[in-house]
Length: 251
Picture 1 (tube, one colour):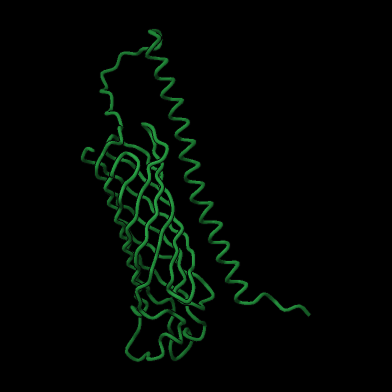
Picture 2 (picture 1 turned 90 degrees about the vertical axis):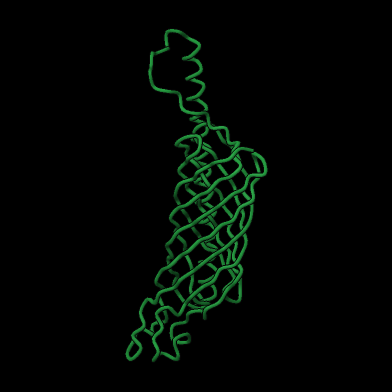
């Protein structure tokens, strides 16, 4: 009789799946951005043809919006963030974290910017089955995560309507895993399978799609592949955020 797949094999399959889905999500957002860029170029060309031909000109009292020049010195972004995570080295299931993200960028030129990124997340996690039984009754304890990273942004294809940026950040993540622990639970960590509270390296690699609302503001969708080392090995997870960008200052 053939033995079923081992826990390690299942974990490796899960990691490979996360990498594949994370890369596909990032690529999908950026591909959508490229399609929007192409549509924007066609729209701009059509408008140019209309301006050259008097038969296409229509009178209008609506002011022409300010041209998006991407020559801003500073940029701030704030949004809601979703992240997949595993709160213990041997836990059989993953959890979902939700929270907020703040990103401040200082653009050295129109292509490269230095960035400071903060993410605050919280969520409940599954634990070992034994912890959920009497007398412990520990079910889906709360987990907090605070991440502070530095890195760079690179501005890719852009036009008046959309822009695609690429980024890479690295820093530290502080995890709080005992938020639901009670005083009468001395065996909380071995029972649940959760990590102890700790601060560990973390990195994020991904891109963003900015849909311009005006010269200074845009709606952003930003998927990431997250690398963390809370356990004995580096693991990969998927994250995505959405929010508003505000550009100001001049280079």
